Length: 190
Image (tube, rainbow, N blue to C red; front, top):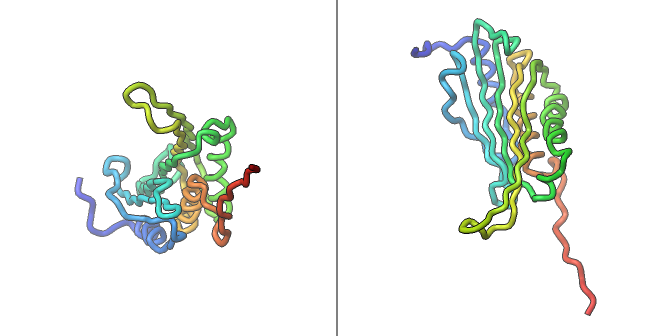
């Protein structure tokens, strides 16, 4: 099915709102191809989070629109996200990490006054240790957050800012305006 050249007004406003947001400098956004089978209209962004010039987290945000509505969404718009970041092993092993990871999303949405409903998702924590022919790097950990929610209006600027805050939290970035203290070495006695 070829989408019509004229986009529904709700979807066009929602996309314009997403395009209007400038994230913090550590987050690089790029428009990418959106899945075609999930809804009649879709728009997608990918994100790379940099800390000290190195990639520390990635994500994807997809806006879906079905003008006829969708019972499971409880609306005509749906936001879908996937965020992943490498973690230190002790953080990846923390049993509270999933609860904290989920709070990063909901707290960010609430802090931006992004009205939403029907939110759901998963937080996965993983630790890997290499053995045998794959031995070498130290144990590694990561977090993966998959979530979706239904915005209650088509002004999605706050939703994108909340998603950027989720990315920043997942990547361990300090809040905007706060500078992380440099790591210090302890002085040993001789």
